[in-house]
Image (cartoon, rainbow, N blue to C red; front, side, top):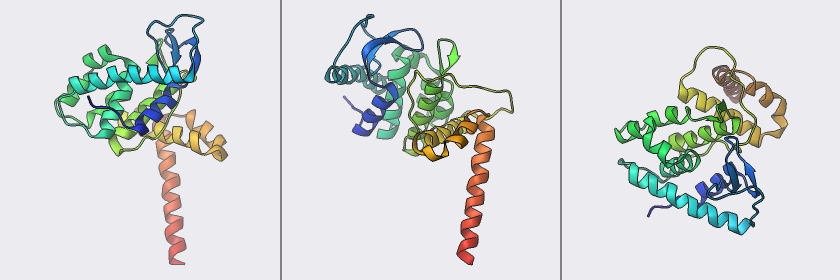
Length: 222
């Protein structure tokens, strides 16, 4: 059976977050370890080694589901992205998803947009899921993860404003999440970007990048 690589495993562990005592996730399901839910009861505790064993066992089911249900070729990166997605949303949801239907029809480009639709838990948009879908989309499209975030993070604000394509929204939220994770010195900027619509944030990022390119080219001619 096909398995995900070590990098995908490490990042799934980061997305899930390690909890050695049972807790209720954003959807109200009792959870422990790295997102393990089967048979978990209030008051349960485990060790880190036990959490890893549970994760590897749980991932086997997600890997088998992707291998069985996807009928088009997948690179290692794309296999890892879908395995992460299935592990998070469940096998039944994946089997019934529009994402799977479009993918099996050969529409690889539709996957990022479909991933971006799966950001709710308990009836509300959750920032951790927005980050995770952006990360999975980044792996799917560019072959590299762009973000990580625990599912239990605070819900994202979705202010009114112009619409944006799903892929653009994923890219914007992914870039914002990456800044949040790796650029502590830019905390005020990151906070501001998170409070505006992804389309506006993406535009601002483009303006900054363009200005930087113009400056670099001017410096090179000087």
